Every structure is written in structure tokens, then in C-alpha cells.
Image (cartoon, rainbow, N blue to C red; front, side, top):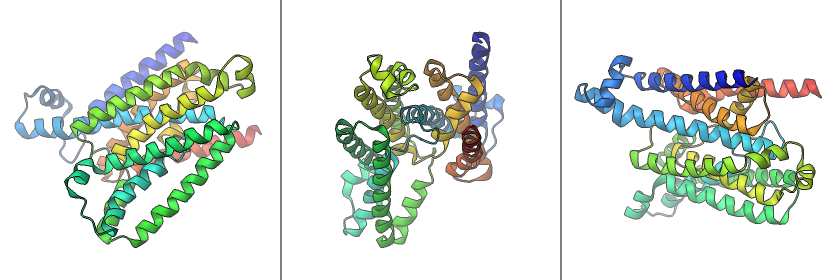
Length: 333
């Protein structure tokens, strides 16, 4: 069993490396794999070096980081809520980010303000982060008063619906150019991440990853239910907040810089469980991270081939997995 697990980790790691290299080669301008390394080292012609270093490398790194972050946060949510259809956005983090971006893109023009230099430098990512942080604050206050995790899940869904209604009102009242910008953001994009933003993305995701590592043991205990976890001495509320903070840092940061990317956090943890046939989060956590990176790199390649938003590709690949999970759970019950 251990040898099988080790082999699977090696295969996944090699797959991520190969897909990362292939993602650098694929695009509107085809670059042979042999020239990719030369371009990274600065030995190719100036145009190829610029394409690889300044455009495709940033996009591939964003896919690598975002895929891992969304998959890990989805795994945590599914275990915490004991719901196979829970994803990284069930707490309303995506809705909060969408509200922040909607207020920034659609709300400011409605008020007749141009935004100014401060707002221009702050950007969509900052607005999304404030929206996600606001949701975390609400969830933090609610979770301190409510013991039942399913009630928190329902409140998160209701909050998402309420925020969605406000966003729709802003869309209805906004101008065509502002509406187009917002709709494009909702489709998700890995190509808008700058080098400075990539550093911020990496730091925030790394912090969320550290919090996720500390949540491994609590999540293993929560697999058998909160009552059992309490009898084993686990502080359930503290563990719950650790997972909430980790999920917000992981999925909230990705949403802020890349827009809402769906189905990676929902489908990939199930793929990891299916491959490794294990429920231990010491194995599932790194497995989901590697699988998430591989899947999003592959989706990025397909989106460049077909010139489509990455969200459409993740949905087309993720929906069959979700359907399989629903059918499988229905047949078990």
C-alpha cells in the first residue's frame, strides 16, 4: 500500500512538471519544448523570451498555485461539513469577493466617481480581498455563537444568495462598459496576474497552506463526527476557525487575483480519493494539491487552444466528476 502511494505521488509530480512545461509551449504562438528552456535562460530571440518569461511563465505559475489552493480548500470544506458536494466557496467567500468587485467596477461609476489614482492602484484584486475578508469576519462572529456546522453551511448559502441579489441589482443599473468588465472577471482568468500580484498570491497561499497542514489532525478526527472528536479532546470551534481561515486565505486569494474558478475545489478532492483510496488527510492534502495543479494546468492549455475562458473548461471537466459522486452516493444510500 505504501509503495502504491509513493508511486502515485511520483506519477502526479511528474505529470505536474510535464504539464507545466507543455503549458509554457502552448499558445497563439507555438514555441517548441526545446526552445522553452532556452527562453527561460534568456538564450532565445527577444520575442520568444518575452512571450515565455513575461506572459506564459506568470500564467503557468498562477495555474500551479491556484489549482493547489482551490483543491486543498475544497478538501477541507468537504471534510468539515461532511458533505461531498461542498466546495471552497460554500462559506460565501466567492460571493463576498464578487460583491467587492461589483462595488468597485459597477458601484463607483453609478455614484458618478471616476475612482482616482488611489482606486486605480488598489484594483479589482484589492476589492475582492476586502469582500472575502468581510465574509470571514461575519463567519467568525456566527461560528462563535452556533455549534451546529450545518447551520453555518445554510447561513453561508443564504448569505451568498443575498449578496448575489445585490450584485444583480448593480448589474441591472450599471453601464454597458462596466458590466462587460465585471462579466469578464466572473469568467475567471489566469492571464491577468502580474509579477507583483504573483508574489502576493504565493505568500497568501503559502500562509493558507501552513494553516491547512495544522488542520490535518483535526480533520482526521472530524471524519468520525464532531461528538467523537470532542471525546478525543479536540477543540472543535478552534479547529473550525483554523479551517475557515485557511480556506479564506487559499480560495479568497485565488478569487481576488484570478476571479472565481469553479469545480476545481469541488471535483479534484474526489479524484484524489479515487486515486489513492485513502481518507487520511496526511495523504489526501498533498495529493489534492498536486492533482489540483495538474488539472488547472491542463485546463489552461485547453482554454488557450480553444480561446475560451478557463472557467468553461473547468466546468466541462468537473461536471462529470460531480455527477459521478452524486450517483455513487445515491446508489450507496
